[in-house]
Image (cartoon, rainbow, N blue to C red):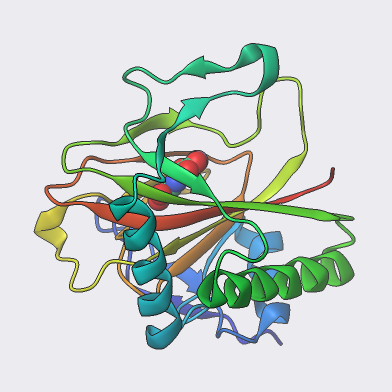
Length: 216
Ligand code: OGA
Ligand code: MN
């Protein structure tokens, strides 16, 4: 039996709960993804790690190291106009202790999903994202057209004391219905990259890391 618990963090039309897995219980994450296509990971980054990641993002912000996001890639790349309003910074090795620890957690998750789900994902990519108040990201999938390389999406939130009234939910359009996840510090959410989702505008700045596990 799998230790899936159900978290009431997300409601839309008062109908849905989401499965959740403890931070190191990646077997439960795999089971929830197989069955439901989505799983919450509370404390995938704990309070200390989350704070360190937020400080690293804010330092990049302060030094002008975030770029307005585009959509698509290569020849299909276009500046995003109204599609998305965030600014991003790609995370690489040797950018600081917080991101180094984050990347090793991401690779552990990748290796575990490869073992348990036979997914064969050799690569990860991840970026910090900052949505200013009023910005969102229209309904989309994370797989680029003509490419199936993104298999799993993982979003980690860095915002202390997020309230319902602040808005800014991640809205997932699941087969069973529509579910909202607030971008609360220490919450991460993992879902199949083919899932349609959107970021609703918030009344305050919204900080996160978006990551993808890829086949190549
Ligand atoms: C994305 C995305 C969701 C979020 O960056 O592709 O959908 O909650 N982010 O920030
Ligand atoms: Mn997305």
